[in-house]
Length: 203
Image 1: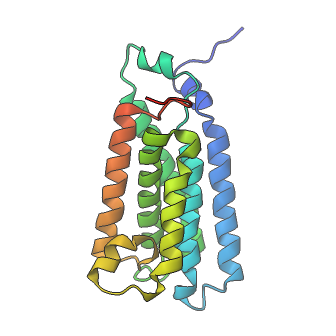
Image 2: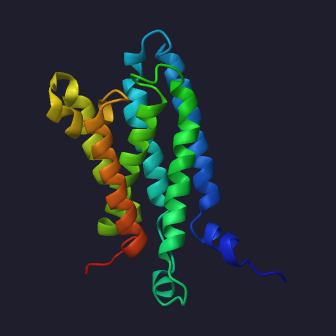
């Protein structure tokens, strides 16, 4: 009988193979949707892809943050924060890489930089929610925020809008990048240090 240990055991305990498969499916759907929108004719038609595909990917990543053995994790001899941080960073990078083919070209508007920024921002929001609400509900705050911004940002203008409406901004907006990077750094730090909230925990 063989035993599973080390990185492989960690990957299986977090259902990472299933997570990677789900991210690949999300990316395939984004590529298909971009083709249906004829986004290659007008970069502005990519806004739904740029805003919503990273949101779906972050929901997949959030589900993988669940730990079925939280008490064992907290009593482990080795610190868990490097594993958590590596998991979150690797899945975020993979999601951004897989989503890029849906928005190739036009990097100054709604191209790969915008997808990278939104993947970072949405994953940061999801990681923060995993710490506060638990992994199973981690998708909810990001979904509510990005959906509200997507539906309500069409009339938003000015410098402040580039910050709060970052999911729908072109790729080169400094304010949008600052907001998304802040969200990711905060979420990644909280998740690395504390981990996801145990399911059913009230305290």
